[in-house]
Length: 413
Image (cartoon, rainbow, N blue to C red; front, top):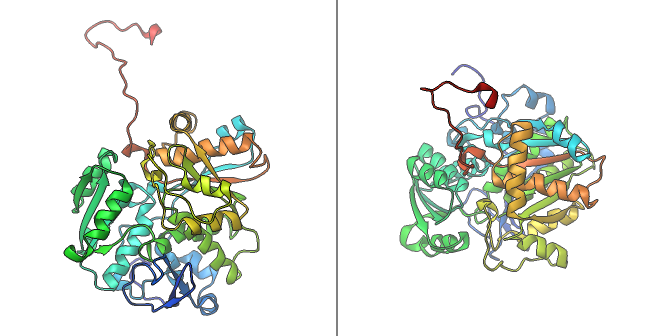
């Protein structure tokens, strides 16, 4: 292809080391790592001063609009290792009718359902698989509620890496089929996502796979970080006042907060930061409970249940990082029940023509609640994350029919 392509041109890279998110201990870059020696997530660190010298906003603006335009901010060293399915920049869509109805400020939805495999998991898994390729991984495994597994399946197939995926029994059917169809071996498990995670951990020795679970490898967060880089650029190197983010494992919330810190450090954005809001389902709200209790860690949630499969994470390994981002940003954590989520999904589809996934719809329900209880003010610009394509999830059946062999009573239609 003769057009300029962010995935084929060599770029300078600035990774210096990996850092334990709990102890700050340094781990060597360019080596395969899971968790830190303290058993906590590792964060990728960059020489930000050199990064800031090497790239400017104008150069960036001339590149094609996809996730890989931020190459200098990302960990992949060599272009040949980039595994891409065309991770386009996702649109920010205003929903003025709903904003007017609620009487709040500007209301925007960032629609991540436009990405490959129909969800924001493409960002994290695209990066994780690219780094796995760079570091010589031959086989990967992941526990998933659906979308992460679908993304791993697609990118691993693209990279020639074997993938094993473990889903709770009640993960969305479309996603389970999609995972298998895109070349991974998928297994249904009679448990929750943490049970699936245990299978992955326990099988590591026997199967020789690399564990791509949320935050158990350092690079999914770097892929999700591009959501923060991208929306800052879409806002003219500024940010919305408040971001509502559906929170299960929380990688995207942590990743965006990291993006804003890095952009601030190189002077691309000012001191203003969005308030980060972690949205959970009432049937699985460990982060909300910990936030309200002032705790640094969340207690595992018993009997977790919600229609928003992506938020059904009873225990998040990065709980302290989610809570830290929420508190540092003066945000909050909020839970909404399934009935409200369903109603919100239907309302956004009907009023604005945007088909959200249940997790995305939860952010609208949470915004509505926070606006009415005063946690978000009427003059704040709010950005909601829709994390996946609504078509992957069940919709109410339609029963209305016409008999084409008889005269039609048009007035009764």
